[in-house]
Structures are given as C-alpha cells and as structure tokens.
Length: 141
Image 1 (cartoon, one colour):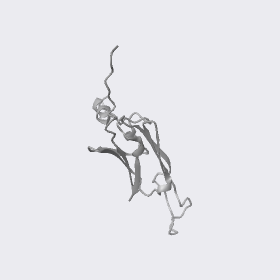
Image 2 (cartoon, rainbow, N blue to C red):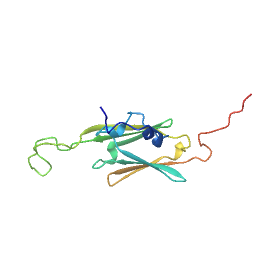
Image 3 (cartoon, rainbow, N blue to C red):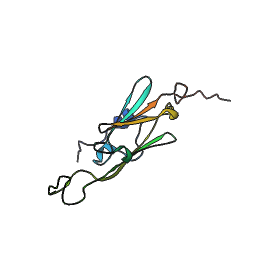
Image 4 (cartoon, one colour):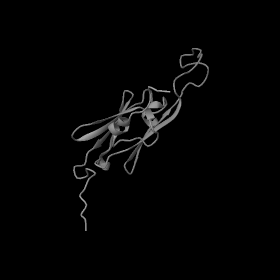
C-alpha cells in the first residue's frame, strides 16, 4: 500500500547536521516540541513554540554538542471548573512533559549559547566559531 507520508531521503539530508536524537521523525509526534533551525553568517538559531509556558517550566541543557529542550505543560486548574468558575466539559490541551534533543554542528561556540523566551516563543542562539568548522586536514604518515 502506498503512503503519502513516506519519509523522503532528503528529509534527513536537508536537516543535516541538526539531526534529531529523540525520534526518527519527531514532527510526526503531535506531542513533540516543534522547532525551526535558522542560520546566518554569524549564528544558528533554534526556535521553539512554547505557548502558555512559564520560563521556569522550560529547561535548556547542552552536553557535548547535544542540545536538549524540555517543557513542563502544567494545568493550573485540574478540577471540573476553569479559573472563572465555569464548568469544564473536556480538556484537549496538552498537559505533561515533552522534550527534544538534537545534535549541534561542530562549529558552534559552546560558551556563547543564549536562550530567550518571549510571547510563547523560545529562541536559542548559537554563535559560530570560525576556528571550529568541523573539518581538518589529516596528514598521512
């Protein structure tokens, strides 16, 4: 049977070197943190949507060249009424913990990583390191 959602070879190639570590195709999981990765001459920027999440519920970690972002979606009103006292019939908005881990390229200056959250958008900036382009010449002895 033919599937219109069959992953393309180019999906992984286009995302290189920012391949995902947490899942083969993280965009297929509706609970996965969706991200954009953009680049200019000086830096890379990872952009995540985190609507309605407080800064203290967003966790960004870097280990080696792996970036991990996790978010705790909390339901402040777990009862049968919302914050205004209205009866809640059902809830469809996600509550819980989600995370995403990606491999960063070798030319990221790991000491200059900066994260900012504003209006439900988390942006993580990675400055490029001119002396670490990920390639080097190997002398054959």
